[in-house]
Picture (spheres, rainbow, N blue to C red):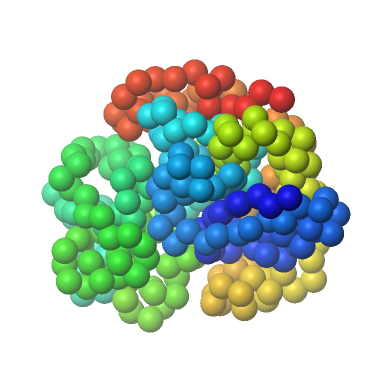
Length: 284
């Protein structure tokens, strides 16, 4: 059996490429057809909705917002329980140097509904600023953001800080601030059609993901392996590994956490029609 699964081409998804995909085939007889999504959570949500994708490793805020707008998917488990630290970047020659300069600036985003879009609202609220939809410039992906900031079509860009670290090191970007997510950062979302057709297969896959995740940090030279695969510095990966927490036990997602996220997104007008945690979570 084949299952279509996707995620961002970033270090968080190393467990899939190191072991999960191979073990799914050898241990479960399941072919995981992995697709990289450089466009991020917004692109994955679109493919979940069109049934192009069965499972997505998505940003929590993005999939909850999408479900509130009718996306036929469910969160089935956390993938990463620790926060994601977003770097806030400008062109290296920009006149923006700190949060005092953020007012009335345009943000590059991968696409509407993406983490770079939604977290801009979260960060602005934290800093006492207000954003409107005309403050955003859609750039598609990380390369598009580099081009938009270089051409001054946009002023600010939010992306996971270690993914963009090579661009900071080579002078394409300058990081001026950071914003950690106030909730677990990555969820495993599954289309309702896949859940209806193959609940037992999905359950086995989730158990396998959890098992591999629980063994991940015991791998010898893990920092070097991740650095080599994703073009990062070993010391940067070491720093990231000290804080990241892949989901490594079988406890279910706490509905109270989902309720808190919904309340936060509603206050920021990211969610217009508040929903219940039960409509977001898959009930086993």
